[in-house]
Amino acid sequence: MWNYERRLEYPVNITEPNAMLAQAIISQYGGPDGEMGASMRYLSQRYACPYREVSAVLTDIGTEELAHLEIVATIVHQLTKDLSMEEIEKSGFSNYYVDHTIGIWPQDAGGFPFSAAQFQSTGDIITDLTEDMAAEQKARTTYDNILRLIHDQEVCEPIKFLRAREIVHFQRFGEALRIVQDRLNEKNFYAFNPGFDCSK
Image (cartoon, rainbow, N blue to C red):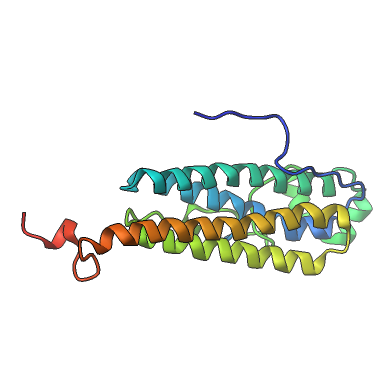
């Protein structure tokens, strides 16, 4: 099913290390609104989706989120790979360094590890798509916050790309939700849940 190209979806070429930026950006790797949670959310939700075209949207976006995870990991790696011990200590990166050296590990900006409890897969397509739209807006907000902290254009450009993709994903999930609602309206879904409340 998967075709992997050995290149990033958007190039990352950072020449100056900056552990403080890395600590903020890593939140989009393993934080509550990050790319890992997004990919796992959508690739899990697709199985219970009753409509093939909507399942395809979940698969497409979930797969792209894996590519975004790769971009974020590359940014963090390039920001930390050439740090001196003095820079590690001054930047507050030493706590991370003790456990992970400069390896990439899924956590948020505050140091809390990634958890599957950060996302939901309910099996109810309206609930899931509504959460997905909110998740894309939360990720966009996180990228907005990161961009307010960054003045290095080598870091800003891939972050801007990722932010723009969150907006596109929000729009695609909105289109998918309209498809679902149009079909469910035919069954008067909002008055009752046909799968549970109708006599057979």
